[in-house]
Amino acid sequence: MRQMLAFAIVLSAAAANLSPAGAQPAGKSVPPSAFVDPLVETCFARSYSPEHMRSHPRQTVTDIAVIYRPVLVLDGVETPQWDASGPTTLINVAIAVRVRGGPPAPMLGFGYCQPTSRDKLDCGIDEDGGQFSLRRTKGGYMLENPDRLLVMPAGSRNDDGTSHSVTIARADDNGEFLVKPGKGGLCDAKYPAVNQGDWN
Image 1: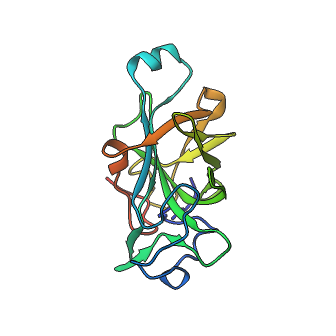
Image 2: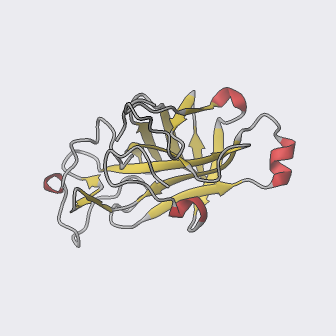
């Protein structure tokens, strides 16, 4: 993936202008971003069982999570990862993924989400990394990948500043993931504060 920040988010082109000035002070109420409270750390995740993976031989994703953290320390400054200055509240997020045969460290993509209704977020990944949506549904939340998502493996930054990405393609049976609010696992994925391509 070309030089990218999140969703730190690290941060998507549309969300790159987020700053404390564009958000209400912490401690005050903030309009929700669909079903996400901007002041509360939130994660939607799914880890597939070996049985599921055997029954879906084309699916490459074994674990996936969408992570929202209300505040990140950017350049030494605590910076809200939400912007309520417009008609809707935008949030910056990270998407963490593991795939069959891939490294144990999660691969990450970063961008932003904006609500289209009380039950749906439309999201984009930085640097033309693709689009996805998160929709509240019976039994959880449906993460929908309409085409492809680009994520970066840990340590993928080359000496010349370029990096390589991994494609999560809908055509590879990676189109829909029923995720649920969770903690631990990929929800605890670490990612850099700002514009750092390498993480461990």
